[in-house]
Length: 397
Image 1: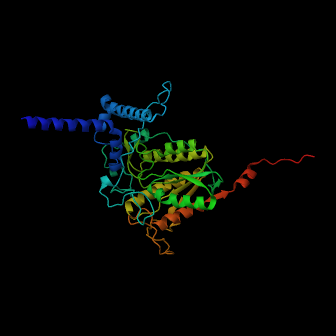
Image 2: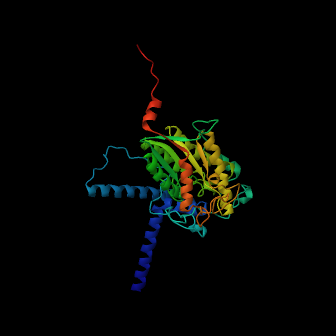
Image 3: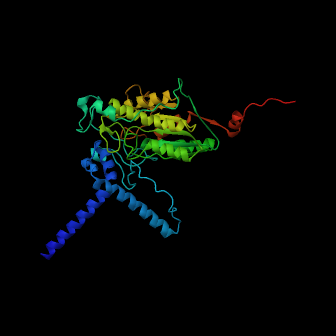
């Protein structure tokens, strides 16, 4: 009996500790579930209860206490007690220890990792068996709202800072200014090559915040509009923003943190997604930062390729309407219409451009795309830039 009691006590302790960890890390687990299965987690109803909501506050308070303890042990000064305590953000950031892998919950045969100098790219932006048609019958998620409800749930759409009749042909940058790279694992492969060439030929430095498994559909996992706005605000020397994302986004997405899921490609979904594109462009234009937006190319999985082409239409229309620079990867790789090829689509090169997953790029493909972006950048030496900004002075006798 004593052994049975000890066994039961051990099971109770393990269960209690597990429940406590789930209670405190509920936001990270919910985000992981949403990105894997593109629907609310099974425990979504618990968010209505105050006790369940308290878990997030306990986690936040514990993290702050640990940070204060570490500072105290290192002998570093703590924040003054009179400083106001910032209110908790409505969209908590998941703990950095959790790697979001969309392919894990979808049983896909994909590579994982980050884009480095290897032949096959990594951390595949994933695909599912969902159909592209945005009809009411295509949604398999029981909580997806009707088109009328979805339109009501979508955030208001803000106009871009400028609506230009003609878009820029080139982005300009001068000595002492920096390039900011934002995007997913596809940008992680391109940015190092472009950054090295900018440094080698123009002496320009870059800031690369690209992060795998990110996009605009799940800001609770990683909020690109917010991150870009904050980065531009903190770094006044950034003059050019290069954006490259998309393959992680073509799924149902929540209308708000904990809100109803919007059906992919529905009017409400598109309205909300466009608003996030515009928010990024607005952040750049309001700080006099040029934008080069790179669209993902056709991909070997037909379903994913169809969905990405739909997103490319949204990127192109928003970027060109705002008067910024848009680069089509399909044009770079010479893909006519829906064609996919591991090599150049026109057969001009026999060097392989795409990785084994049919989504990412080989080193040659990464460099090809980096060179295409580089050709859209006009470098203005500092002396010429200063001369161009000086007002014309009149001669005095």
